[in-house]
Image (cartoon, rainbow, N blue to C red; front, side):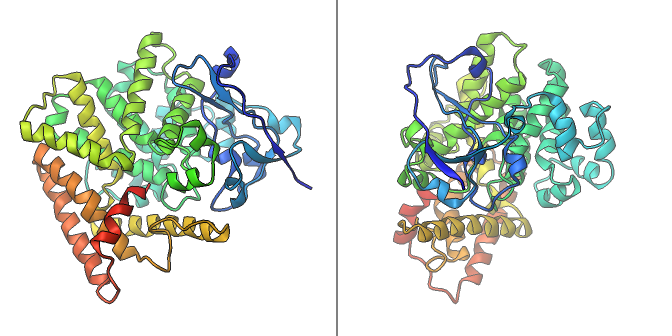
Length: 459
């Protein structure tokens, strides 16, 4: 019989041993809960993720995750620090941090033990997938097809290809084995059972980010460091997303909501998870310590900008810059701000894709919303806005999202970068909105007063 233990929360002023700080820097949702099904216990026993640390990295709040974790929906409901644990063999508890683990356990690397990553890319992704990579800058890029052609490895393949295409491995002297391992770990830490917030979404955002980096104003102004951070932020911006939104974590007293004081809970977790993987793989370990810390902070600044509850803050700042015509991309802080806006656009660009792609994303995000609503009903919690399948329709959710979130952002981006791509995106947005409008003609449309105040709770 499985026994539940209340694990103690350690004080924030407790020094963290060096061997702990050298390990991964985040508590993994994957280790403690699963909202869309129970994974193989053998996989859970190999997962990492036992540490969280504060911004100074001098002290930490960390919980040692011992035993086999419960994967039921109800594991999210009790208060912070409460998990279900049971006995498991010492062998399964060992942390296998070497690259050998991925050579033998990851489906991405099966049968390629003697090849380096560049050869893996050349040998495994010939044919249709390789042809698609030649058109990776196309706005019509079908990430769903690409994911199928790469056997579910779209994020690793996409990100490695783009970093290599820019020559960033040589420029920053990145160890390709460390980079490959980092990307494999990133992909594995996205929850494949999430309908929307999964590795395919991250790959899609990374591809969109690449399209924006190629826009004339950015292409001639961004430094190699800007490009590296932009692509890494896109790949990791939703790392270890649990498939529920921040209000859900707050009202269920989840330990991460407590840890980050109910502020940008998910985005802080995504950032800390990414930093943890960077440190575990040692991807930047060859850089001067201060340079590595600076890159971690800038990565965090980009990921935190994707918090949808701060949409108006960033949009207002963007609009002011454009009205005053004072953006100077030779200024490092201005370039960083534009990268933040580019990542925000990439994160919510689905309504600006062609209808065939946009509709698939709409179906997936709605499925994730409604699944959260089902969990809330099951546990007699107040159902979050947009998550009640009996009161909301996919069409009305999409129309509201386009009207109050997507259109204002992409209108300003079009002012900043008035290019063919911007016109294409706005054109698709208008057509998609009209298509959804036609589909909901027979439904009772939600009024603006109903939709506007709840769109901040989307993510």
